[in-house]
Image 1 (cartoon, rainbow, N blue to C red):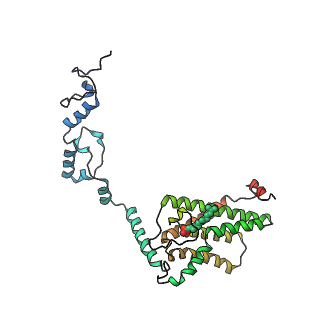
Image 2: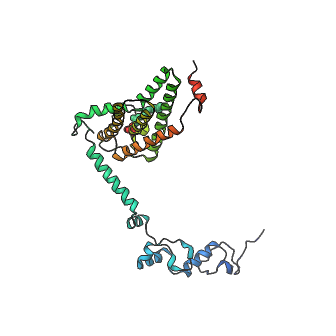
Image 3: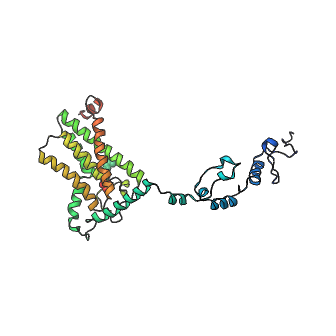
Length: 289
Ligand SMILES: CC(C)=CCC/C(C)=C/CC/C(C)=C/COP(=O)(O)O
């Protein structure tokens, strides 16, 4: 049987002798001996003396060096909990975000005047809920599918196919972001919405608003409408967004981001525009009897 490897003093490697001060270079090659070297030679390497030193100097209280220079006692880490550091060094961005969120909550509560029947504008609630249905995903999806089935021109089919693609893309992106951000709806919201899916318990971004921005931009770009009708389309999108806050469904930032996202989604749809040239299979499939 092979005997274990030993150090210069004849002790087997890997055993711990607390009194040992040998370094690996001097034959003390085990991890235990290296640790004992640190604690016996470096003043304050143990947690208690490290804490004492950090209380002596305010500079040390803020430092966060790892054990890199084990030989120099000044570079050992202070033992402050992380949350203290956050409180001592709030970043400008952190303050700005917290302030924005506070303003957002305050303003959303103030504007939630139709959040309940007993709210100050509670009598407007049925009208707001009608607007809500006008921006719901189900009527838009079913309406587009119905028009597609009735359309007898290639141009009409192309536009409707892209509208369908836009609506599906919107549902996908909004669900993804809602699932990632998981921001709760305002406390004053009554969850009495028509046909929701699981992510709709979250409020960021407002799905009705993204749809309103996307669809209105789509209509303005692909339908030839008289000016008053074009104004009406823009007004519809704007009032629908506002009604989300008035109903208490959303905070202002959910709606603001919803407008932005819906606007950008149209740019994606426009960029990936489906046509008989770019997606011939899709169009041929749709034309099968
Ligand atoms: C094909 C398919 C899965 C359709 C689902 C359509 C659907 C249930 C859309 C949800 C619409 C809705 C209630 C969105 C929530 O809007 P917020 O403005 O409250 O975010």
